[in-house]
Length: 193
Image (cartoon, rainbow, N blue to C red; front, side, top):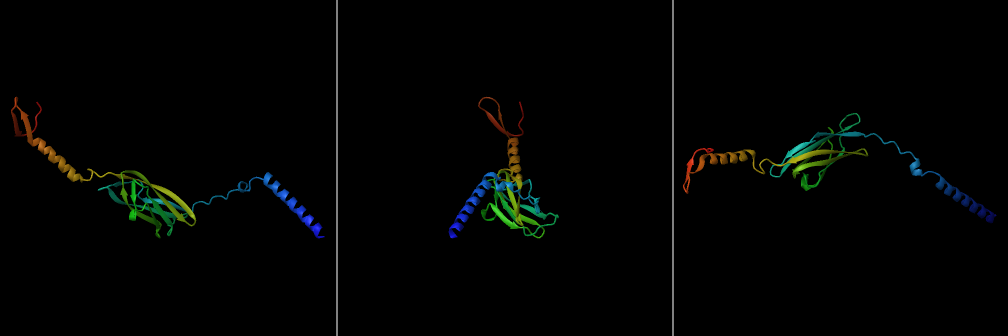
């Protein structure tokens, strides 16, 4: 009987193997045949409270700036404890504390997260902001522009004073040529011939 049982088992394995091959060949790919689960709507939103399209006036090459974002749930209530990551580009943009390109903070009970940074480099840049909460991650971009300081490092009042002094010197000293090798220097305002 054991010989008959062995033959029966071998025959069953052969049939099972053939059925599995036919199933694989003639059935659609199981991964694509299953419908993808509908994507759940976001559990929260990100609002930029301060810093969107800001212009940072770089004084002596840098300026301290901050970006504030607010996280709200589906019912428009503030979300506390969400993880917010702010990322500055290398080069134009700036740095967070200790020269870091990223800063991660949790939202307060009012749903807001604040990131202070030192703006550096002249030009427009994009700061990426990503929020992770309850297994979902949303991202947004904050665009800002770093402007060169007025007067290339000197204050506006100093630049105006230098310009006024130069104009006064030109108005007071007039060099007049009277012909030949004789030159007269005198005070007055220049006149056109």
